[in-house]
Image (cartoon, rainbow, N blue to C red; front, side, top):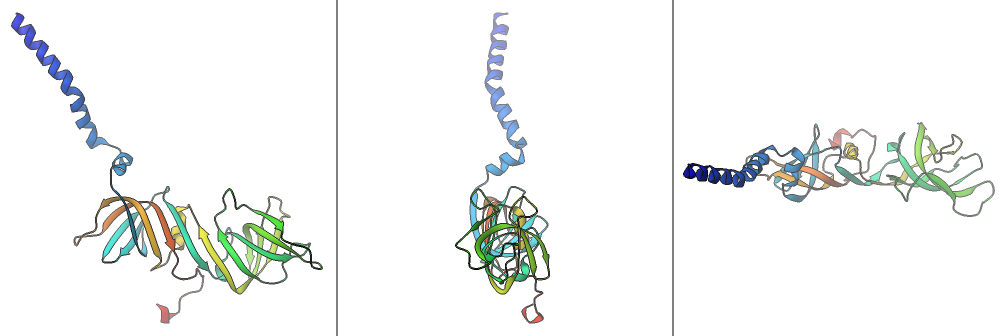
Length: 235
């Protein structure tokens, strides 16, 4: 009887020691996708944008190719330039120009910035100098409310009256500095430069492309953004 009790006590002690290890081993295969992603190595890859396949970006980095998986949390920054014809409703732009008391800019604006508003850069207007006749130089920042032909209406305040109308010169210099939104990938064109930081699920090889779950993407436009259709000579 004493031998039986002693054997049962040993079995119970072994079970107590092994149970946490068994539970840990069982949990590993059941990690959620976020935990599994965090365990992957972080890599940075620089290459050229080659297109989109659903929510995956195709990137060529020298001889290696990658499928870059995007998510709503992927931060995408785009820098470069744009042509005047690309300006459209909903875009946030800033510029300095001379405007009259009716909120009209008589001369075409030659320099603008297309930006992402933040804590420092927000919609508004500010005088930039003394009035010259009927015109006063202002700094404007806001969203394009309407665009009819070449005429653009910019909303720089909450009131419907806080607007300014202007045209952009055909050869206007428009810089692009957009950050944050994964939807910025819609601006990318073939051969734009991209720098991707994320978790690598698979390294590229002769058998196939590498796979990266992107956390941040910094893109530099190879050409100015435009709505012009490419000529057949440039196809």
